[in-house]
Every structure is written in C-alpha cells, then in structure tokens.
Length: 382
Image (tube, rainbow, N blue to C red; front, side, top):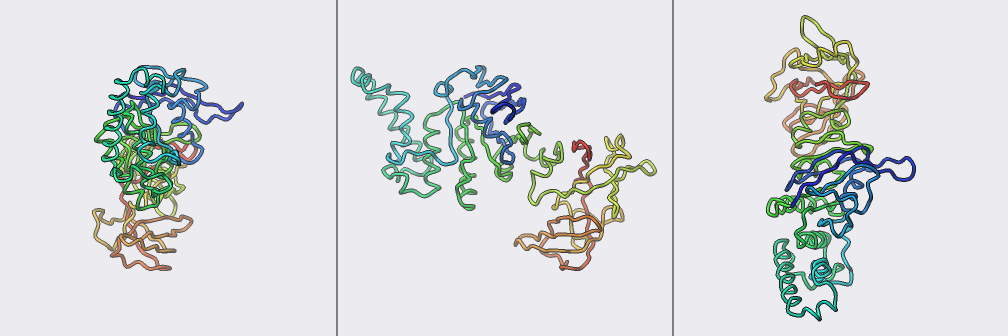
C-alpha cells in the first residue's frame, strides 16, 4: 500500500483546454480521499492520470515514493472501478473476478505447460482469493451467473470484487454508484466505507455528489475548472469553506448568499444587508474589511422559527421578519422559501412550526454560523 501525490500537475487537451491546472495534493497511505466537483472540474482527468490512462502535461505523479509519469498502467499496481462496471458480458461472475489475476500471474498458456506444478498452485490461490472476495461482498451465490443475469447492485459488487481481489496499492473509483437507484446507492455507500475500513487500501473516489463526498471521505478535495479549491475533513469544509464556491457546493439545501456591507459601530463590526444586520462574532479579520461590499452566507439549517424552542435564543440582534413564499414538507422538516425585502432565503424549519404560506413570521439566526465572503474575490473573510 502507498500514498499518492500530485506535484504541480497540469493536463492540457488540445492547445489551451486546461482540464487540470497546477494540482498539488497529497493523499496519505490508507486514506479514503474523495475528489468532488461539478461536471468538467477535472476530477476524473486527475484520476485517469493516476491510472496512466492520461499523460500529465506538466508536473509529477507519485505512488508511494515512485514517480509514475512514465510507468505503464499495468505496472502501477492500481485497480480501477468504472461508472459503467466494465464487466465482460460473455464471462460469468467467477471469471470476471479472476480474469485480472490469471492475466497477471499465469503468464500465458506455454508457461503453464512448462511450469505445471507452479501453475497449479497459482490456480488454487486464485480460486481461494476469488471465493473469499465473493463471500466478503455477498455474491458467492452468483459466481456462475453472467452479468446480464444480475441486478445493478450485484454488477457493482462484481466490479468491486475484481478490484479487491488484486490487493493493489491504490483503488481508483470513478463515480461507481451513479447508475444505482437512491436506496441501493445509500446501502452500497455504507458497504464501501466498511470495505475500506477492513482492507485499509488507499482509495481515490471521484463523484459529483456532495452527499457521497461528505459521508464517505476522510478528506474531500473540491475542484472547479481544473483548480483545487479546498481540501480538508468534511466537517471542516462544511463549517469553514475557503470561498463562496465551496460554501455553495457543499450543503443541501445550498447556502444563502446576501449582498451586504461591513460596518463598524462602537467597536463592534456588523454585517449589514439592508433589511437586517447582524453583529460579526469575534470581529477578527472582518475588522480589516470594514467598508467593503461583501456576501453574507447563511446555511438554511442555521435559520430557526423564533417561536419554537431551539438552542439559539431570539434577541434584537439575531432575528429578522420574512414572508413565507413556499413551504416544502420533507417529513422530518420543512424547507421554507422566505422573502425579506430584496432578499430571498431558504430555511430548514422543524416540523412543529406554525408558519404558513403568504404570512410573515419571525426567524432567528445562529450568528456563530454566519459566513462572510469578499464580494470581489469570493474568498472567505469569516
């Protein structure tokens, strides 16, 4: 097993299309790293460069301490799981899982004839590993079936088994759950987490789904237009986004962004959005930005119905009044679309609320969770 490092890696397609731009990222040994971002952000290209399916235009890629830019894919000791499973339709499950091992270890028909005893032991070992892997994934009862006779979830397990049986240094997974239905996706997500904990193999997982990223990754790397925006633990990325893009991409429903200005009165810095203003907790870097136009970021789950009991007590400094435009029931909560002057906000409200559509209500904000971004650069101030 080994870590993976990108050192100032750039990938250019054609003359000027930079799919990955100066990527520097260290993935630790045995870590589960998730690369996440919208379509076209460069995450899959980065994964394919590790696999050797794309060549880096600039920079170095290391697996362990070895630079692998010029190492053929077959010699990199990686295993890849694809979005479309990539199973051989004419082979049964057993042969699909065993195929890579046979190709790598049996070395051709002539060698088997001249090394009969050694080949027999290798075949026994392959059989043991295939059956152990199938049992681990719960597909031991399907070893004689072909892919067309399997469900989507079973096919995904076969694709995982083909990667696991190799015992590579690194797993590369390219959106492996995107073809599964919602319920099966949640189930398989948990299985992948358990497998990683059991096997301890360095894993790079690519997805556009921020829920997958948050629930699976020990760290997540958010990319945009080929550039790494932030890399940290999921809870840090959620609580302390580096910029507006990260703040808006991570979290569902997405963060509210309101045009505002930083002002100072009596030694206290305020973020003033016109219809309401809030004191900036801790002041900090916000004091150096007083007078600047900013974006105030408030997550929907940081807004509460002021009439309900919550851990945030309403005061004159943390509340605002808004009209309820739309109310979406989700069972465990409501998503409320609020209108306050020129501002539109989303709020996640507890089911015990009495708020109603087309009526005004008072809402309270957790000031500890108010974010401030420079309007021009979109970099986080607080």
